[in-house]
Length: 170
Ligand code: APR
Image 1 (tube, rainbow, N blue to C red):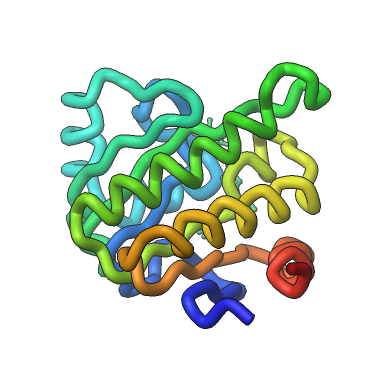
Image 2: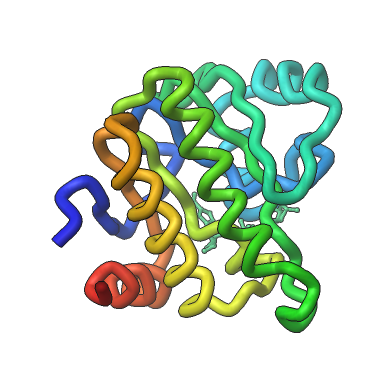
């Protein structure tokens, strides 16, 4: 049982957590999917701040304000593009979760929401991505008091089922 980790189905742009995570690309200049949704909901000031960050490496994370979003912060992380699994993709995805959680803790965030990083346009296999995500979140929370609560916000039922399954496994 992980009281500090939950899985819901919903739209991450509507979550009132302290920080939401954006599945970005290395330019940090917006895109489709959840990246597009977050930029649309946050408004143009988010892109303006992102321009000052000069991109972000895959597996790393950078933090901005939330602007018109209910969340106070957006943590942008470029996940790995799936290229068959032999190019370090699993480690890079794990690094995304660790980097985001470290930044959230540094900013004193008590609640953080993640989308399913890399499992859309980047085609990372869903079940494997969910197992990596839950493993990394569990490991981080075991060592840190913050964030107090981490929520996986899944956009569809299939994604939610995969994270529910990963969370049910020890
Ligand atoms: N709330 C929560 N999850 C969402 C939302 C939303 N509003 N919109 C999409 N998602 C889900 C997708 O259904 C998928 O499960 O986010 C997950 C990640 O999918 P993508 O957004 O395609 O992200 P990713 O696979 O990491 O690809 C990143 O896509 O949008 C571009 O600029 C982005 O180049 C980058 C690439």
